[in-house]
Length: 296
Image (cartoon, rainbow, N blue to C red; front, side):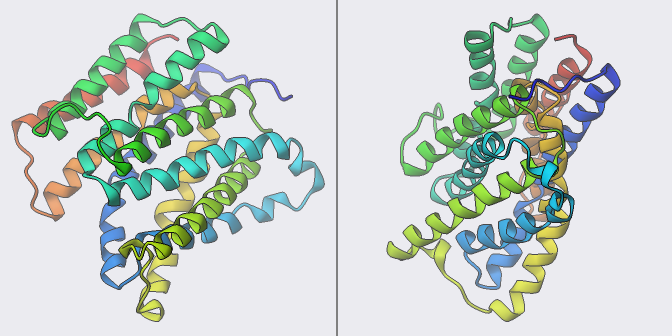
């Protein structure tokens, strides 16, 4: 079993900034998805295309036999996170965005509890404060007009389960890291591709719109381009960072996705961004600063 990756404070800072930056990038991920769906490519097919492109990206670094060391262990990690990403994507289609995001971003809670009970990690004041600030910021941005976001339908349950799976995968990545990032990226994309295919087949059997496919010739080049630009680089960065900073911190820093999603939606879709959203943004930024600058 591979031991934890030893990191210096400088490496820890860079890993934290990488996760926060990727969360911000994913916050604008909705725009190309909507554009591609306008071509007639359903969400399930987009997930397949993105993972199919991404699974090829690390292969040049996996030509050496030594690069496959620990494949079985990394396959478990990758399957957990790939399945989590796929289920979260599907949940955004099956339920309202507010419930999906809040239920998925309970991830830091699961990660922190698992670290405390399984690995005897202590809950520090900084970690607790960062969680309160982060969840408070999401409440301000997303609001609770429809009540407390408890699971109400299949999409809600998928969002909740996806957060648990993501926490499990990132926790295992931190406790059982790989020597490089290429193998974790490959197994993550392989697990996500398999999960996406299963979701597409189920959706097709139910005649769901997420399995519809048309205008492939026109939309496919754009789907591949968006996968290369918006999907592949964050995969490398997040999975590299997940082996260097603990799972709870990864979940808190990824809350920048909520922040960026609110800002980009206000800029490009005309959605509201007022005092509540501004307050939530400030709280999430503070959560990230507390988590990055505080000692574990």
